[in-house]
Image 1: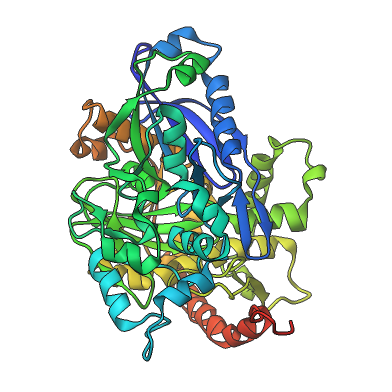
Image 2: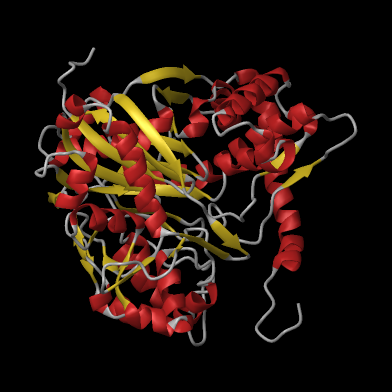
Length: 533
C-alpha cells in the first residue's frame, strides 16, 4: 500500500498514436492517467505529425489528471518525459516549429542518405567501407538506408527544403521539443540525439558531437542542441506552464529518455536481462556494458538512459499496428465503434477468439511487414500477407495467425540478438499494450521457446520508466534499486509439445521472406526521378 502523501511524478509518454500523462509514485505505481490522440499524416513515403498537437495533447491530458485534485498537484515532485524517437522537429528562431515534424515512419531521406553514405568505388550494403567504419567505430551504428531516422530527415531537409533548413535554429527530437516547451531549455539527451549519427558514443558517460561526422552528414553544427544525461535536472517548469497545470513554480523537469530507453529502465535494468516491447512497433532490448554492433542484421548497442551502459536493440517496424489494422481496416471502421472506449473491448473479444483456435492457426501464416522491416533485414519494400489461406479458414484463424506472425518475426529477431548478447536471452520481460494479452504472451513463449515474464502494468512501462528516471534525477532512487521495484503479473513457460510445430512454421516463415522479397521489390520499388512509373 502507498501512502496518500507519497510523492508523485508527472510522467509523459508521447507515442505515435498520442500523448499519455500519468501520475506515478517513485515505487512505480501508476495512480492515474489520461490520454489524448494525435493525428499521423501519411502520404506515400511521407509521414508527419504536428509538434503543437503533441504539446496541446500533453497539456490537455495533464490538466485532466491534475485539475480536480489540489492535494495531488502538491505531491508532484518532478516532470519527466518519454517519447517516440527518430522524429525530427525544425525549430525556428522564434521558438516555434517550422511546419510538421518528420515521423519515424517518414522515408523521404533515403536518397539523401544514399548520396552521403556511398563510396566512390566500393560499397558494403550501400555504404562506403571507410564511411561505414567511421560511423560504426564512433557511434555503434550508421544512418538507416531507409531514410527513416533523424539523419535521413535532416539530410533530406538540407538537400530538398533549403529554405526550411536555413530557417531552422535547432533540429530537435520529440523529447527535446517537449522539454523545450516545459522548461525553455534547448538540449538533447544522449539517446534522443543518437539517430542523428553525428556523436562519438565510445564513452557512454560522455557522449559528444564529432565534427567529422557532422561534416559527413553535411550539417551545420550550430543547428544541433547541447547534449545532456537522461537523469539531469534541466530546470524548473516555465512559470506559464506551472500556472496552467497548477504545479509549484519550483517543480523540476528531468531530461527523460526516448521510448526504448525508458522502457528498458522500467523492464530490465541489470546487464543482459532482455525485454520485449509490444506496441505499435516492437523491439527486443537489453543493457550491456560495451558498445556492440551487428551490421548485417541491423542490431546495435547504443547510448541509453542508464549511465555507463549501452542498450542493445533489435527493432521491428510493425507489431501491434497489425492488430489495429485488422480491427480498423478489416473487421470494423471507426464509425462502427461507438467510441474509442470500445477499442479495448474489441481486443479482449479478439483475444478470446484467438484462444479457441488451435496452435498453428490450422496452417495459416501471416507476415507482419505492413511497413517493411528493420531487423534482422532492413527492407522497407517487404509487405504483409496471409499465406496458405483456404476456404476452410475463418476470421478466427486469421486473428490468431496475426498474433503468431508477430511472434515468428520476434523469433527471427531473437536469433541474431542472442548472438550479439553472447548468450540466450533467457526469461524475457514483456511490456507495452500487446503484453496485456495473456494469449499473446503464451503464443510468444511457445513460438520463441523462451519464458515470457508479463509485468504487472505492461501498458504503463514508458511512464514508469520516466518516473524512475525522475527518481534517480532527484536522488530519491538509484538505478540499483529498480529491479526490486519491478512487479510481475505472470510468467508463461513455453509448451514443449509445440516446439516442433512452431519450429517448422518458423522455417516456412523465413522461406516466405526469401522467396517473396524479389517480388515485393519489383512491386514496390520507387521509380527514379523522371522515369515512368
